[in-house]
Length: 437
Image (tube, rainbow, N blue to C red; front, side, top):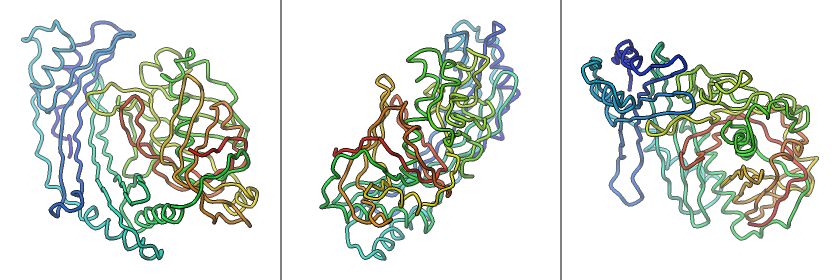
């Protein structure tokens, strides 16, 4: 799935025809997508393969933007997209760049085929007997952005999505590898749901709670990253106004760094071809640099581009996080639990939601564990954690010392689904409201 055969110089010359004013910006975006999926239970063995490729041409002029797309990649498709964006370009002025791409190699996905057996074995090892239906997919994307003056490096992403269904509910997650650790992770979540299948939801609670790394990743994504995306901030004023605002205690620092993501999803440029940043969203409790794409960064010298992401060629880039980090603290997980006696341990999230207008967030948990004698042991039923965005980082009273990679999951902001990642420790929070669903 390489784009080495694309004539980037010819593409740049063609794109440059769109530039009529000094402030204009234009680019061509090329993508190939491959999805390998297991068949549904009861279907013929093997796997299904979905492959697509295409391009997009975009012109930005001040606050206006035009986008034209094609579901193939060749010189003619590019020039046709340029003409649709330009609207007035004479056909004779746009010779088709010469390039053609090799067809994709046949898909091989033995790791996808073998993963369900590994999960079921891990479930049996935990002395649980329950039917498990698994939807396992491998996702691969190759992309290239060519501007009028420069071409970005070719970027490649590869990861897996797993959705497990049992009589007691569903669970889903993202992984960069389908190894024994991934199978164990899925099995633990399923067995935890099985053991809590008849447990009552916890009583309303605003005392201490410990969020495991997986839950902490979703919490930070919903209540920090989403809240500090430039287009979200713009709902209440100019995004620049958020810089310097104190959100929490000095021990809380949150970073978005696509270049530090796990290797299969690591990025050096964003979906606009802009180099990514190690962006301190919050440093020592204070907002430092919101997430911005190129358009929002152009509105202020205090804002920086590098966080433009596309759900695909048919969508324009918008500010989105890619890989969150919470700077580790000094507490072991045992210490976090010891200081949350009679509280709740919240291991994983089934759904998260941010309401930017009300300034509130909500996380739904399929189950929890009551903390007793410094151990998270007694299962409870489902629950919901709610709070105000402005109160979140003040509610984080302790941060774990051991960071772990965690797929924060699918983010569906504006109906456009993207994978998001995180490397975070467990955290202890106080003052947030936990109730029954």
